[in-house]
Image: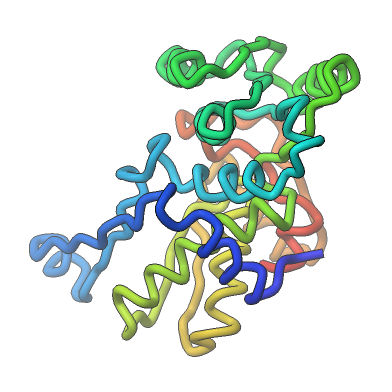
Length: 244
C-alpha cells in the first residue's frame, strides 16, 4: 500500500521544525548548457546530509512510546542508516544499524557519530536482511526499511511538496531511483497536486533495474551492481515499482 497525499501532508507537519526546508538554487551556466531553466532542490543541506532524514524522522516520530523503548533497526549502505541514527538520537532511543562491509568509511563514521550501533555484514541483500532480522529478534527493535515502507515514502515525498511551493511552474522533476522511495513519493505528489509535471528517474547504466522493469512490465532486480554510486545500488520493491 502506498501513502496518500493526506499522509504526505501529515508527514510534512510531523517533521516541520526538525527537518530543514532546504533551498532551491540555480546556475546560469548550467541553464545555458541545458537550454532550460534548471532548479536544484539542495537536499545535500538536509540534516544527516540527505533527503533520507525526512523518511527516517517521519517513521521514528510515529512510533508509540512502547515501540520506541526498544529502539529501531535497519540495513542500509549508509544514507538511510545515518539519518535513522540521527532521528533515533533526537528521540533518545537506540538505533541498530546493519551496514555492508564495503560501505564507505565516511558513512560508517557518520553513523557512529550519531550514536548508531554498527553491525557489519557481507555486501548482499540477503546477508543484510538476515542480520537485521537477528537483531530485531534479540532486541525487539522496530525495523524501519530504507524505502519499502509507506511511512518512509511519505516522509521522502515532502521534498516534492516543498519543491512545488518554491517553484510552482516546474515542468519536469528528475530524481535518482535506487529503491524508489523518493521517486515514488514525487510521483504521488505530482499526480495529486501538479499532474502536468513529468517525473523522470535517473539511475546508473549498470544499476538500471527500474529501466529494465518498466521495459519488461515486471519487477527485475539488480544483482550486486559494481557502480561507484553506492547509494543507488538498491532495487525497486513491489510497492515502489507499482507507484512508479
